[in-house]
Image 1 (tube, rainbow over the protein chains, first blue to last red):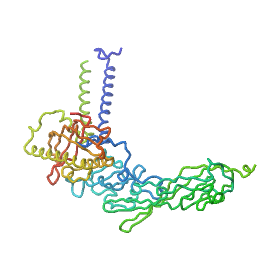
Image 2: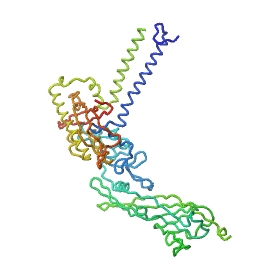
Image 3: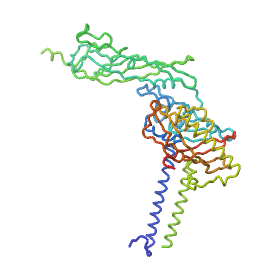
Image 4: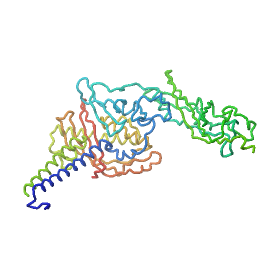
Length: 309
Length: 188
């Protein structure tokens, strides 16, 4: 017999009840543990700053922590400060210096509370700048990266993040929509011109008195013809005009002049290689390489005899 | 039966004790004030003269903070110098970044914020000495709006809710607000 609260309940029923209560207690503890942790994760808004989490779902803005250089960069030019695989500002005006070792920003606490000799209070923000992790820590020496002067290359990357280097918009002749091309005949390739696609684009960024100016321009565009051939051009190329003076001839500046050797459908794409040159007022300078890849455009090539039949 | 009741009581007591310990160790400074808030009353009567002076200085810092936060938020200026007169880290950094985030989204705060703070506890033995403050902040007319057209940011709203703050005494003798939270889940 198993009755709840009966006077003659055997002891194992009491044990069961105790177990259930204990389970309830464990659940209670688990549940009450959550808000405390959630409070740490998200963090409450300060008094008078209600609804401060309304932006939480928005992506980070360039310039602050969370901003960074756009993708498509040269892997050799890895940013100095990274969190979870993405570029992050090494210094933030309000959060301080980033420590690559633990993913936290550190600043000296303002003002300094009383501290033992040789030690200082730091305000630490972890998870790459998550305010929910904001806390005070007492350290006997500054964490790695602390106090580093502004890095012109990081500023150059910040400036770079404020402009858009667009991937090339490409076209080819023969165009499949207008009919196939022929084996061995010249192919023309061109891309939309304009500063967004080829530069020059200019921007600047400043931090603690240091200003870095950048100029971004495309130094070459490399065409992948789909048959293993790569052709490098230095400019956007020339659009093919079917009734123009060069109709049926080779492109004056960007073409696959020998044409395809075999019939088939080929996927053509292009990559623009940007050089972002940065300078400081103090005479320092450098380059950051970037590249952008276009979509693909199909080219259909037929054998000559198909046309001559 | 009797034994069962006893054990149930014991478990309940134990769970309460554990609950208190759990919230105690997981809590941030501002959350410590919660049980005192529920106790209500006017604790000022039990304070000594030096505790009352500390409480007064802490309340002055708190109202100074709210005023400075209002001005800095209305001007979208996270570096507003008034903030450092009344605030200390980590709350100082939190307030600055909050204002900056709103600014980055083209928003600012406008309107009237009504505050009615009270001191809930004073601890002059602690290092540093601290004062806990609670407030029923009336933000009914205090709104987060877009700077360009003063349209209220969707998903935000005023109202009266509990706010808690901690003031601490710094080596130069100033009382500054170094912790605080708006408890928008707790209307008042």
